[in-house]
Amino acid sequence: MKNEMKARQLSIFEQIRKSDEKGMEYWSAREMAKVLEYSEYRHFLPVIEKAKIACQNSGQPVENHFEDVLEMVTIGSGAERPIESMKLSRYACYLIVQNADPNKAVVANGQTYFAVQTRIAEIRQMDEFNRLSTEEEKRLFLRDELARHNIRLADAAKNAGVIEPVDYAIFQNHGYMGLYGGLGARDIHARKGLKKSQKILDHMGSTELAANLFRATQTEEKLRREQIKGKTKANKTHYEVGAKVRQTIKELGGTMPENLPVAESIKSLETKQGKQLSKK
Image 1 (spheres, rainbow, N blue to C red):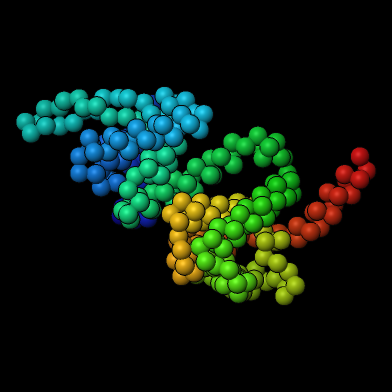
Image 2: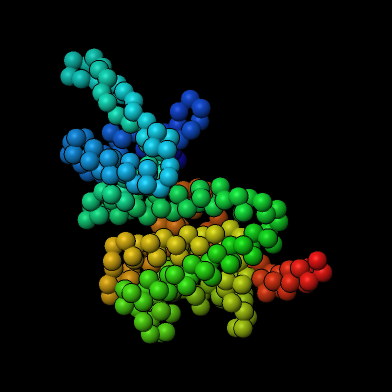
């Protein structure tokens, strides 16, 4: 029963994820085609080809992400026969959902899911981030990244029609509500026990900052990619991306952001860092 409940909580894309004999994760192209609602595999092949081109253009070796394989399937008589398929990496799946039919709800969900998961992997692999040894260093790095991406998010929101400061505050609140299970900025502020003068972002640890960074980067990309127009649609998009990041945290067994501990003000860390640099 517990396994069934856990399976229902997982994204459909997480449910079909497999591991090979070396423990490397992959997705079957045949199963991906079914999940993305292609009636026949041959109709899915042009999407794979577009994804391969995108992979090549990004400077990634195509063969590292799209591996031709034979899969055994059962036919009417009960016997098995081999059919052509592919083993897809997470990055390959990300490129595939970017090139699939965006009008399908499952494709839109896949775009957010793989974008979030790919961004998580990117940060884990960033040399600059991995060289950081302390929580303080990671907080400062992620806070700087978030500040930079919030500028880009504000620009994407403006292009979507979120122009006035009050509208942008509402837009930001929708992102928080998606990520924090319905809690808006004021609710988070109160739950964390922060004073009126204290800012939420200044008291986030590295884990919480990372979650908000994913929310900001993926919302910006979705607003631009789908050319979303109108305040209502922009707010809805921000909420949905926040909720998808929350779902991903849940699937990974992480702590919900509203339950993460309050960190020391990042302003004091910046002051400390400034003093250390001045001594060098």
